[in-house]
Length: 280
Image (tube, rainbow, N blue to C red; front, side, top):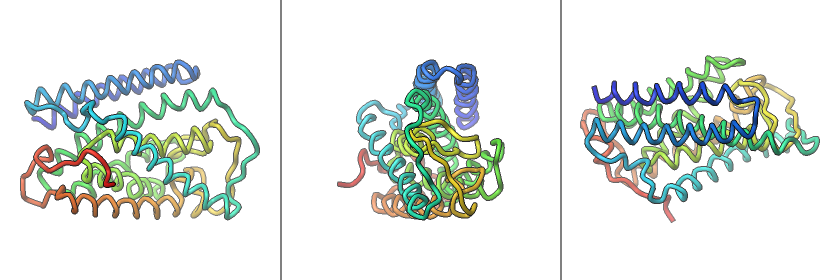
């Protein structure tokens, strides 16, 4: 019942936030305000329902150190996508024609923030965290990662390969990041940094949802294996490769910190030794 109540609470907030953002998406400034407001609402609902159902504070969204952890995450996510674009650019598959839309990028801040916060709370804060208690870190990572990837089949230009790619480079990687840090601000930052770099900076298609108008006026061309085709660079083998590599790094860090929950241990993630920052 703890899982049911938490899932229903965050799902209701997810639906409300999504509807509000969709209603104002034609106005960039309103999208910014509504997106950030929806993000705050999601965090509040998650913290409230955890406190009510588990009789404890939701330390994975604690305010202390939140900015620093989210900032590290943004750097990791944006850096990872920049590495993908660098490979596409040097191979002649990504061309910059000039400056895009600053106002469009501003609107995408709110849109991508809302998406990052809501998806991380639903998939990592509730699904992964609670399922991990029953089947362990590795099985929970695989299961929730696949669910996260398959959920992208609902997108406009979705493909089965695109869903598999998302499962590997994002579903597995973000679950591993949560296991390593036991902190949602870090995973939210990674998720936002990746998405905003994709749409808000490099103006590429994000998860098959159509191209975005960001800071750069650019186009992509070339084989689908490298560019991702209509699904966007998230369907590129470059993205899958970098995501898989970062997954291994986070899992190594989780092992080092003793944060791996073995299968059958029934150990709650809240009881796992957590760390506040990335290693120096």
